[in-house]
Image (cartoon, rainbow, N blue to C red; front, side, top):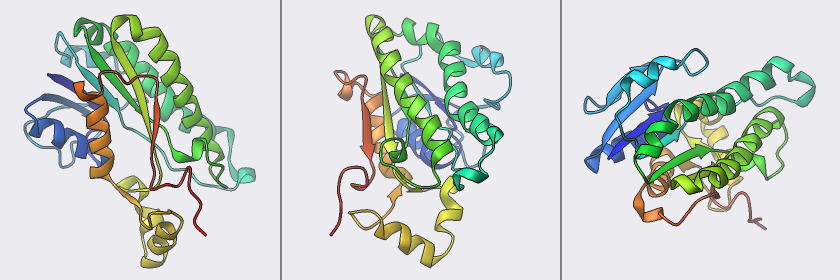
Length: 232
């Protein structure tokens, strides 16, 4: 099968690319930089904030799955957030996803049965200070997920999202940069630790695969219990 992973050269996207390749699938990874991407993956250098029309030249006739992995972590007190902060978070997380989905929709439909996976955040539903900009953008992703799931169901295209809490990836490096910061982050989670890229990739792989063929329109929390549990 053919899969497209946007943001596939780092973090969760890279872990997902490796898992898909290990299963023998063809994988196209789109990112600004190749990073540590395996040679088996087809790399396409694109910035999703720019014109992505060239993407169509690298797509197979049939595309069985799309994972849109880019994200932002822009944590500031609300008075310090600018309109540009909100715009950039929305551009990366939402507009980028919209542009890619519109670009590859014909190939997803041609596969007769396909899956789209987006990424939200635990902060979209669990109120967290200093998360206003990213929570607003990711809440839009959740709305986009259920809307597209309804619209694409007739084409047998499933649309789901994962909503992780803090995950140990390069994007979150500054939040885990010292033993003290890591310990504080771990203590906030009922399971006592932050997530890993591999754990998120496992869940992503499930939602892209035929094993989840009756799952659509869902936003699934992979968050160490952060969204629903309270430790005493």
